[in-house]
Length: 579
Image 1 (tube, rainbow, N blue to C red):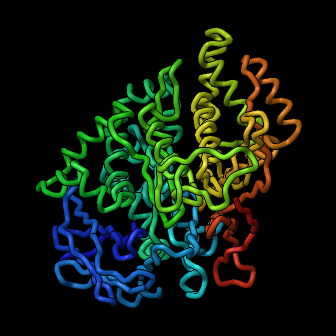
Image 2 (cartoon, helix red, strand yellow):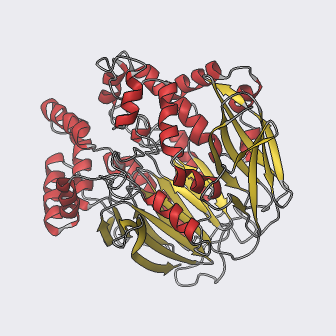
Image 3 (cartoon, rainbow, N blue to C red):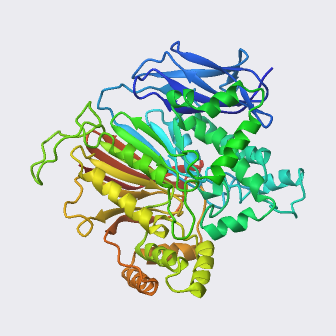
């Protein structure tokens, strides 16, 4: 009898028709995987094999719009989900009502170190925000459930393994040899996903709330693709090739495939090849090798539409161009795709995305003359707008590494870049400007969305920032633009770094940042911005509720319940804005 090894993960619900979904599973042997819904919907898929593991992405059809149905998972006809004696409610699929003005709830965060605490009564990094959300939803069914959970990177930590995982690694190989206590190959990556996604609360949460994911550095290794010098150094190590190929392969299997719609999956030649092969390992390995060698070979970025809310998830790791003098956060091809997806519909009329209108004179915009979507979400693991001091130091570093102060300073700056994680959008100045231009263009288009939100994580704290367009453009965008940064879901931050981020927003930080700019011969940024909330530290999630032309933001922090009984979500911020 086939068993359920991992999952189920409810990855997609069809927002266009409200009649379909996709569910991801891993079985322990080849089998027929099936989803049966209480309302009669369902679907089947045969498993396919990668490195001795058996996976299926099951298309579910026949669902009723604007409804909720419980579902079961069967392998070769035998029920394997829900688990016997599960303390959680049935996993369900909620479908939208297309064409209505129902709210869209988007919960997001990043950086979840999944290692279980050695002492069940005390977690050294505090309560897990995903665990706490799952418990709240399970205990209080009437609590509004997110329509999608957006995970912005560091879903697994390949370079920071738990004590339990290290003991398991030691049964496979000598940990005194590189890469030591880090994962080395595909099989060891699967261990990380088991540790993370078999957590009972998270397993139930991912089975009933659709998810969108993108990688960040720790999904492969800290500071992944920081610079050309970093990449040369890593490629010279004997263990790196297996690590990067395994990281990309496991990401494709566990995260990337579920990001794609059924239409995109049907058109994906690699997915077709893997599904029809007796063993898809070599085909996937070849794909990963080509993707690592050429950032323009494949596109990890993707688009999802939730009614009149558009989410663009942007790959800010594998798509980088690292050659000094040409450095870019995204390859030219990748950035062109992002801009095209953002602009599509921003110049149109309702129901006719992409149909261009003549722009109105300032102050004479026609009410209701909006494009194909009302809200644009740009999911980028790395923040666009950083604390001012951090931004200026990264801009200085990019200039000095490029040779503006000579070879000696370039070597010093490269060492600082790698030691200090100086690799956000600010460290790629031309890319920062290009992203800013795109946001300004979309926000100023005839069909401008009401809000543009840049969703980010990485920096192990949360804050809200708003740009000031007065020096960037003579005609500021009509859209309300925000940088929404939220991390970690479950991790920690050194006290010294907390102080550093607080200093980064201060007047003294700005002054010191300007001194760095002068030394690096960097012109001051034409874009200015200010912090409107935060910083907040701790394990946390943000939730955007989007309805009509309005947006509501809530920040919830996971805190130990002083009355006992585990943890609870405590709201640290609620705010509204509208376009």
